[in-house]
Image (cartoon, rainbow, N blue to C red):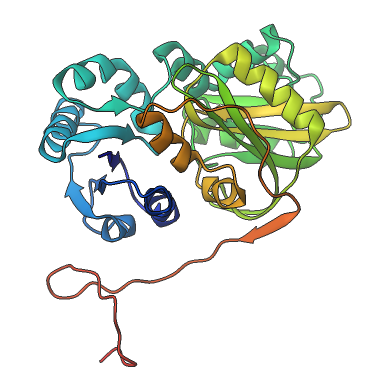
Length: 333
């Protein structure tokens, strides 16, 4: 039996359904437990069980609640889904795993620190020979000399494209630098933007690399995308994973420009669009169940290409007891 705990479930209905589908397809016994700090998180109502936990900012209470849930449900695997919990979980991984039977799906603390800090990411990529947009220094921006616009500004540890802006002139640059906490400013890239879903086993062995073109995004998350086996991107991302050595499902953002493949950021977790790659055949959820069962996985490219995904919103109705209504019987009233 393998019980899976999905943290910060939020709107991750697709991901929970992917885990449930993988479980049923494999004939795997176990439950999906979803946790969130809000009882209004839609994904809670698609899991087998749901739990309300403290906010991540209440770190000790948050970790204690995770430990309690794991022991109550005999959880085998803890799956984080948002950036703000990654550093905490990597720092408290040993504590959680020593007090439960669960494994935390988290990369080494050093890897998380590289990925969660944009300057650290930039330095890592540059030192290992990957193309990145040049980062401007404060001195360059403060000087009265000419700057080549447009530029791009974003927070040092931002997520979901919050406070990330194209900068067209000095006036906008000045405004955004005051608005954004700990900003970094880079050259503006023009080209085709890609998200690349990768999966690595618990020993950082690469299993899948799936690029997709970002046709449209909303709130920093892909809304429309096309799976494509771009060999240049797959080669570069493979080398990146072999050097970084993360574990689990990793989401890489990059762009193909006139210079080649240029990297934007690395998210060491399931991205919001991960179900696209999963449904295309690179099933990270199935991989995790197989790993928990002691199976050895090998690298493969058995995923479909040139398929398009269109994401959309859907409403659910909770009754007077905060339970999801499944049957409407032709009427809402």
